[in-house]
Image (tube, rainbow, N blue to C red; front, side, top):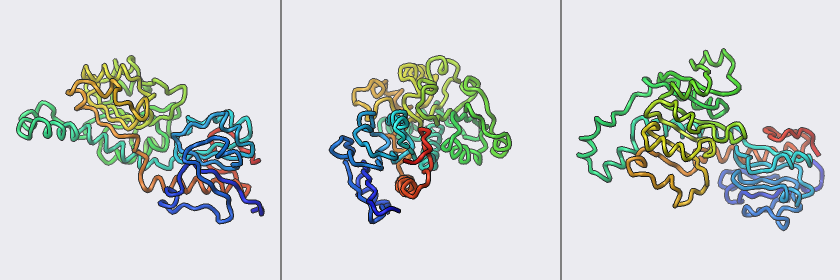
Length: 332
């Protein structure tokens, strides 16, 4: 490594890196921005660590003329102008797969919650009392997962971790992905590739694991809801924008969607006056929500921050980092 001090600017606070035992080489010049990416903070940066939910515009990128590599602290990179970065020879990297286990576990938790009506029953007991809830139990009889068809949309790192966890439960497993798995892997897990419409028509439970790209925006719209089974369970741990809000609300009101489990929403944070939060009580009983925290576990955070720090060290040592997402392959 050369004698000059590589300059890192981090939008991730030092306290968080310290908490997860992630450190920089001692002779590096590291500063922290509190998620403010203005010239005052980043103009001298060679390496920039950003929060996955922070926008990084072309103008911001231009304010750091020495920038070599941008790394998110998570998997998402849709808020970074990656094409502009590429035009300037700047690598943009993410932590692909770094939180796959955490998100997969969260997905399975939402599946169990909705199939077994756990949150729904808890709400009814607190509101209506134990006896009234128990007396009405037969009307909302849950299922065994082994008797259902589970359809997974997206079979990347997260989808595959979900698949591994569902196999032992004996459900019929189908999936849609524009790039199917090798036949031997499908056979290993007992999963069948189908087209999206077929999955919507036949699945009792649908889990969504997709990035936000032009081809996935609004993938679940009225035509898809119209062909789903009555009472289908839909789990979205991808991005809110993959599902169109108004048709989803209509499908919940009609019962076409029996349960909706979501970790992601259209606006985050979701405004308190969002109409989605103010559907009828009987509908909201069938909606299970978490605050985009599926991938936010101790293990995932530590893993991804370590990967990001290592990527900058690799670049400085003449090694192309892993998980470059904008096609730049040459070091500056």
